[in-house]
Length: 247
Image (tube, rainbow, N blue to C red):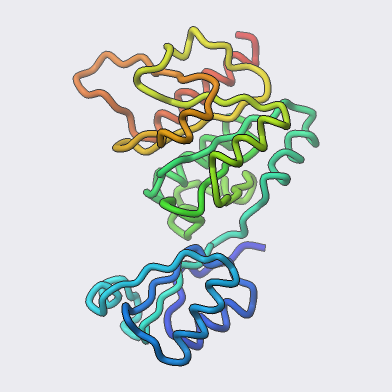
C-alpha cells in the first residue's frame, strides 16, 4: 500500500510514525537538543539505521512546512521500498534476464522520478538506490515518475558496491555510464545487466565504478560535456532495449 505524506513534523508525530513502522528516509533534528522526547526519537532512529542530520533552528524553520516542528522533522517515504530479491523475482516471473538500474549520488528527486519512469517504459525490472546521498521515494519523486513508482520496484541498500558484488553472484554484469568509456554502440549490452548511473556533477563514485565490468560513453557532439542524469539513463536504456530486441 502506498503512503501519501512525505514530511512529518513534531515530536509525538515522529515517534508515532516510527512505532507504526513508517519508512523514514531521513530525520532532521535540532542540533545539541538532548531532552527526553528527542532522545527517544534518536533511539528509534538508531534501531532502524535511519539517517540523522543535525540542523540549526534557522535551517529547521526553513525546512518546516507547518512552522511547528518542535525540533524534529522526518522525511517519510511516499511509497514502500522493495527488496533486491523482489526485483530479481520480477525478472524471473517474466522469464527475462534481469535488467536493473543502480543509482549513485542521485539526490535530485526529479531525476530519480524521471529515471523510474524510464526504467518502467524500457522494461527494467527495478531500480536500486543507496541509503546515503540519495533522493528517497518522496511525493515529488512519485509525481515525476508519472505513476511508474506503482509498477517498478525501488530498493534501498546500505552499500551499493556490496550489492553489486552480490548481484554478480546471481549472474549479472555491470556497465557504468562514463564520459571516458567505450562508445555504447560498440558494447554488447545484452543479457543480465545492471546499469550504474551517477550524478551530473560527480558521476559514479570511484569505488562503485571499480566494481563495474564495462564503462559506456554516450556520443556527444555539442559544446558541453554532460547530459542530465535521467536523460543519460534513458539513452543507455534504449540502446539496451534495441540490443535485446535484436535490432
